[in-house]
Image 1 (cartoon, rainbow, N blue to C red):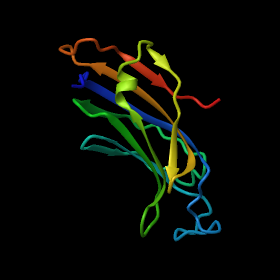
Image 2: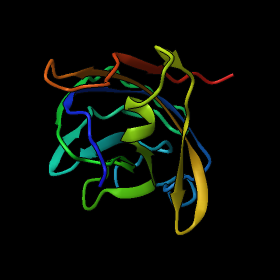
Image 3: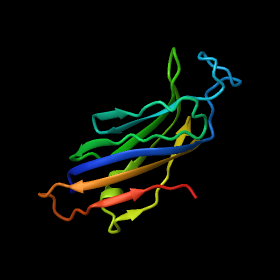
Length: 150
């Protein structure tokens, strides 16, 4: 039987380095040659969406902070999408194992989430994640993962 540390997760998508471009030949329905990326973050049945980085292209950044109540969820799922007028295009998706984040003995470490589209790597997403265990949780730590590109 798995034991879970419940608490509050603060998830902050910061920036991405994308290798996949969804704009067909640099031309989209919005007549822009650059993608307008945003991030959708899901923990269990809780989903939040970042603001759109207009013309962020392959190197977008964001400043959103999302708060999740973690009970027994095991993964944080990330999707990077390109905002279009008709239908948003998936650039790529990836995930992090919450147990690895919440179970770290160190207070901070570096992480980068690799994202994939149709089983091919389509970029990397940098995120900051803070975990605050409930006072009733045993064995939890206050951890922070700060992802940085080098």
